[in-house]
Amino acid sequence: MPQEGQSAGVRELIAQGRVEEAAAALGRPHRVEGVVVHGAARGRELLGFPTANLDAAQGGEVPADGVYAGWLLRTDPDQGAEARWPAAISVGTNPTFEGTERTVEAYALDRDDLELYGEKMAVDFTHRIRGQRRFADVDELIEAMNADVERARVLMRDEAAPEV
Ligand SMILES: Cc1cc2nc3c(=O)[nH]c(=O)nc-3n(C[C@H](O)[C@H](O)[C@H](O)COP(=O)(O)O)c2cc1C
Ligand SMILES: Nc1ncnc2c1ncn2[C@@H]1O[C@H](COP(=O)(O)OP(=O)(O)O)[C@@H](O)[C@H]1O
Image 1: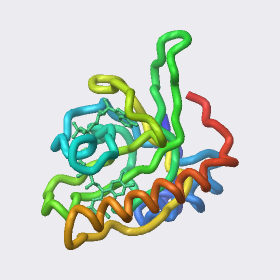
Image 2: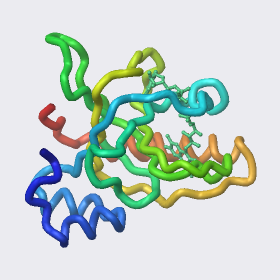
Image 3: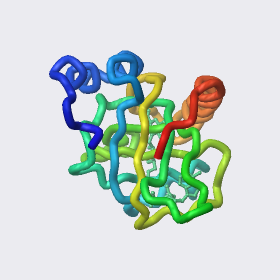
Image 4: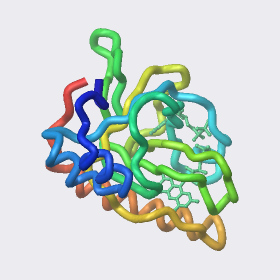
């Protein structure tokens, strides 16, 4: 659904991480869908930011590596279930940990109580924050993630909640 009718121009914007321009062209933020899978189990324990990792293999064009603000959504919520959260999103190989697999992961701002493994979810990309970096140590990464989360909070304050 999100891919259909996407022009080469919009695909190029997404590939370059220019998600604000892509959203303007599409009339809605670009969406990537997938099922939440297990990652390296570092998010919650080591970094203090649990991230839902999407198995995004066939769920839409993945934007350029980087850090974004946007939405984490349940695509088939039960009636009454919480369905969307403002999020800080990371796309890349986690170079600080010398990862090789490219992941799409999202931290729902200010929450630590979600149970999302196995759920069909999506991320909507509204703003690009920065590129991926290889930090010298974990503390530097955590410091950067804190700044990203603060930035995402400000950027998402006035964003209209997307349709599921
Ligand atoms: C807002 C945000 C920014 C991130 N920025 C970087 C980064 O610049 N470099 C990096 O190596 N990993 C970055 N990450 C990814 C973390 O390394 C990753 O979430 C962590 O390894 C946990 O992975 P796991 O979910 O597989 O346990 C970022 C994650 C988030 C949520
Ligand atoms: N605020 C949140 N944002 C995203 N996922 C959360 C959040 N709070 C709890 N979770 C849960 O924690 C999991 C991620 O924890 P994490 O330690 O990063 O493990 P993994 O490496 O398996 O992704 C998510 O899949 C989800 O089920």
